[in-house]
Length: 239
Image (cartoon, rainbow, N blue to C red; front, side, top):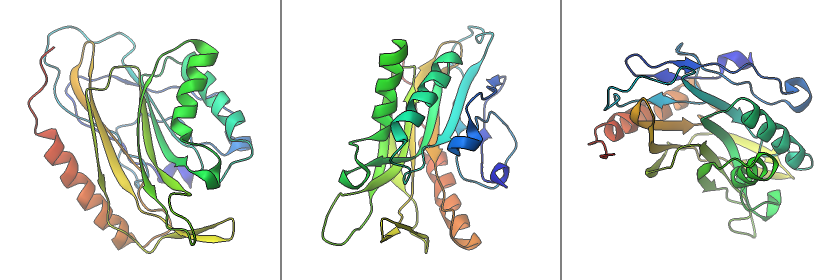
């Protein structure tokens, strides 16, 4: 089931993570739900929340609100309609971090960057400022370069101090789109920010292979966790 395709990994003493009840027409648009869980399930998206708060200020009463959603790279015709619905949901629920999978760029999908499109809709429709980072990988297509890029993105209400990414091992996964057979290359992205009441944190977002062998996904997960461990060993930036 769809509920078994998500992995969230929360590491923080005393952190309060709020779940947002989704009001999106999920069945109609096939959008993934919002999850705020501490249970490890079969991975598709990953949030790792690390680095202890560096101050004694109490956490905000409503905690940190996180939303994760797959934008569906191949759904082009109604993309802007779906992005507006997501933008309204983000604003209505005061979401702090929006983790996006299947962010797309390129002529084949008719947008420069779908994550930035969402950021603009939130700004235009609700006058809210979000910072955005994306990490996309070029998908090889005959007779053209950079016609299609697919990857991950993060929208943050807090200023992004640093961001980075790492490619995950290539797998046998492929998908057919517009008569092209696409070989996907996955990555894990991270950003560092400071949240009032929590201090400096790292936020990680990934989309592990879906149509692949279990061993291939395990290899991706192994690289991902080593990357998280490496990036987690940092000296916090002074406020």
